[in-house]
Amino acid sequence: MHADEVLLAGGTTNVGRVTRVGDTVRRPRRPTSEATEALLDHLEHIGFSGAPRYLGSDERGREVLSYIPGEAPIAPCPAWAYTDATLVSVAKLLRRYHDAVSSFDPSDYNWPHPIPERFRQGLVSHNDPNLDNIVFDGGCAVALIDFDLASPGSAAWDLACAARLWVPLRDQRDAPAGPDRSLARLALFADAYGASKDQRAGLVDAIVECHRWCYDVVAAAVAQGHPTFGSQWMNGGRERTQRTHRRLLESLPEMRMALGLVDADGNQVRATQPELTIRGPQLARTGIDGERQATGSNRIRRSTPTHLHGT
Image 1 (tube, rainbow, N blue to C red):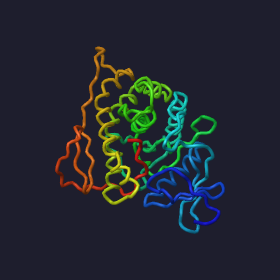
Image 2: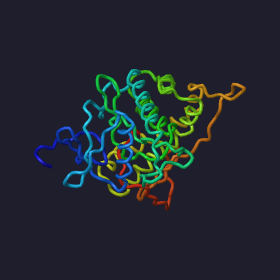
Image 3: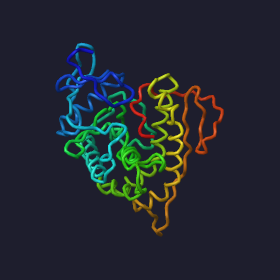
Image 4: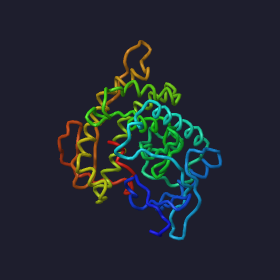
């Protein structure tokens, strides 16, 4: 690292490899960098201020992006990251991003780790709105960063990802201290975004799938020997993942009620409960009950995930 470079904190995949040089950020290029660069160019052209600008490559072949001043919550996250005002701000930023990206055509590019096909509706979702991927300035969410996992998806998929992380929706043992207000905060998040009924239904339908997708990515990295993910996974990450999965499954009916999703007779609409499967060599196939099951599966979808995603 050159003397004029400052190492930036946060992240997992590229830890120790993302630096600041003046008003720019230098990041490693990826096989799908061209798609990300086209997306960032579109956001700049459309006038969306809530994302870095792509500025080209440096003499070492790294991506050069504009530096966005502010603060991103980095674990252990500060208390302000879980206030209602912060949650509302995140929802509004996500809505602005979706409005800006809706006119972008992703068809000509190679995108990373695809989300499940039924949640792909043309819009390029960020797919990783983790706490340390949103920059705040003056208490307001001003920008999304780290678009490494962005790919064709949908607003509902991003809403599910963000709600799980920012509400947050997880076992109370792993949640911020205090009473459980997660259902009220989920409704607040959807209201602040201005989510339609279809988007609210899509959020609930996607919530378990996006959690499973996230940990397919993580498990693949662990299986390939990623040191940071491996350490996190073996030091409580697996157990937190199972607890989160159980919480999501158990809360599906309550989420639908909190979001005002009922059938024509006013009856609660129940969703099918998929099973979480974490795959990778030397990893057991794990169901909701946490029991280990033999598996010959060794499917690896992508080798460069970005975050542990708050489990």
